[in-house]
Length: 373
Ligand code: GLY
Image (cartoon, rainbow, N blue to C red; front, top):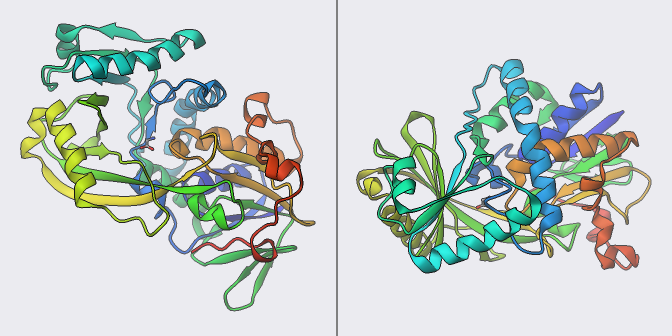
């Protein structure tokens, strides 16, 4: 089939690569490949650390995708020659004080009901696992929450896709996609993977601003730390080459995503309280991007219920989990494009689950078009 993928973040690129690998003729359109939420992402493959009450379907989807990652990473690395820095040392969920620890235990309640492995550590054991920590109240080891460098994943996928990636703004038409100069690309199917920008076509998607900070320093943790520090949530992610990613804010904010002094100060203060050795780290970069949030925090993966004859598949609304969910989304999108079977874990996230779709009352944004900025 001839397929247009609109949006070259990690989700769009993963869908495109999966379709190419399965023999389809694919083009990906985006004026700035890898430049959206993928650029800010810390790359945590962390279904357990992000588990919350009432979100067990999302947890199951995350676990299914996390299990695909080791093989997926190995294949991408072997095919592209790009080392994507997959780290499998697990994650420490840390409570700085006793209130923080109590809150952390609420996540553990969810994990216990789902049979997901974790190991609680007291103050002394936490410091033994991670000597860079300050005097924290306690921690939990999540042995299956790993991480990867999303910028390198995007680089690997871009390398595999080559000149199938077109740096252009595209709009969806009934028979394909069109460009600003009036030319068109006719195709059998369109995959919409435009992250927070999808809100012009999918009203359930809303922008949620996130800021991350890149540091460089020698005294950094050996594995990912996700923590509550006197009520502030923060994560500290070590990377190859001395880099440390500190994240992330989460603000309902529709205007252009910019980093604010208040948010940056709060994040850095929490990170330094957790890992005092970061005091002397160099500040390398501050990045703000929109995450694509949805009403139930789950992605929209599946046929667009309200659009014309071209088969249009949505892969949007991945909110905090775009990197984690990329492999499972790519497989499901291929199945939807080809008309194959999609596992029940993923079918739960069909766009039509929202009543505005089910009732047929949704009117797509002007003429059923989505614009990639
Ligand atoms: N998944 C981490 C974040 O969205 O900040």
